[in-house]
Image (cartoon, rainbow, N blue to C red; front, top):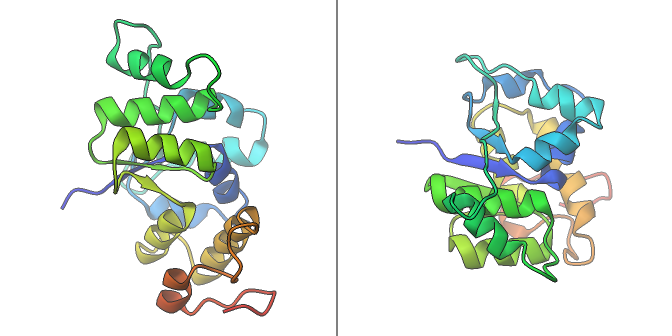
Length: 188
C-alpha cells in the first residue's frame, strides 16, 4: 500500500516543530512529509522549524521533501497557483503553492492546513480526502510510532488551542474516542 504524502502549511509545521524531542520523527519514511517552497523559506526564521526540516529519516534521505515549483503560466503548477493567488485572494503564497503542487503532481498528497479559508480553497481545488486538519496527521504519526502518546497529546493541545473558537470540547470526538486523550484542562 502506498503511503500518503502530507504537505504541511506553516501552522501545522509550527505545531510539529514545538515538540520537545524531534528524534522519533525520523522513524517516519523519507519524503512522506512535504512543505511548499514558501513554507521552507519562512522556516529559516525559526531554529526549531529549521531543525525539523533537517531531520534525516531512518530509511535514508530527509524526512521532509521540498518540491520545486515554477510560478509561470507555462508550468501547470504555476497556472493553478496564479489562479488561486489572483487579485483579492485571501490566501497566502505558501498555501497556494501547496494546493497547486498537490493538484498537479501528487495524487497521493493531502494538504494539512488550519486556516479555514485556505482549507476551503484546497477542498474546492483538490476534492474530498485530499485536505486534512492537523489532527489527522497527528493520528497518523502516533499510529506509525513516529510520536509518543505524550507527544501526540502535546500536538493535539497545540492544535486545539488554535481552533478554540470552533472546538467547544477539549478535542473532536473522533480523536477523544479513539485515543482516550486527557488534556491539562481536564477535558477528555
